[in-house]
Image (cartoon, rainbow, N blue to C red):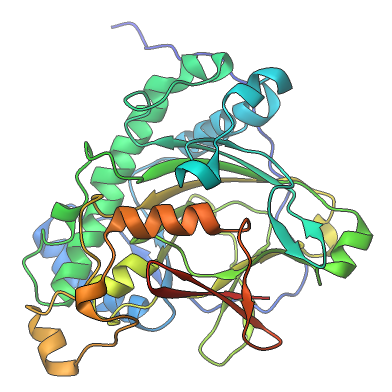
Length: 364
């Protein structure tokens, strides 16, 4: 049989991993080899649920994608930034504040980080269906079938087993959370390609080396493909910021606000930030691939009180159940406001804004 051919694309070469002696976060490494079976998920449940109750972050290995497939998606991920002419890029810029959606391009310098310093990151976002709700620049069009295959695999073989395990941890029917995440729903579970660019030293000083303020994610589960430029840090339970270490062909997975709300605080949305890379990686671009899981648009983000676990341990709320926003309300409200709306300073570290009655904090 003939071997299927794929469109050619320039190979993206990552910088080498840092050799600096950094304080790394101690995160569990979860082997997903058997996550496709109920028996395998039952074995993984204590490990995954403990991670999501404590650090809120974990690594996943043996998830079914090869290193070659990993390399290929990073090659494609760089196309929107290196192969799309500036004039064409402008036609696909998302009006984030008006629409509450990231679909399309987010250009650099639209968010204020601190002391007048604006961001130096671009991202390109597409609904997981890839072609159902948006069109794409010409340079990306040859790769749309591969992007669709990638989102289908990520949704069905990675996100769904995670959701099934999290439901098990609450002693709910295994598909409880998975049923909230229909692949064909128009909610903003999306694929993101993102690229950070170095900043002038004077901006680093003004922004205290922070590239993206400390925050929790909007959705339920975030899947990040590990890449070697160290910049991601999490706020650990002891109050210290620690670095996320690169592991070849691993996934970095974390819980977002929406899962914290649905789980009544049982699972934790961990605060994380992006800062200037260590000395031996300064001056490098940082390319990322993400899959941001969100519940269906009409899911109301209130605790699943039918959980026997929540009935035993109690519920931690950030708002009254009868005032719980829908997934679409919370997502669009936070998206439209981020970096574009004023924040209320609570102290020297914390700034806050209210989104559909929910206090949302940023950590600087």
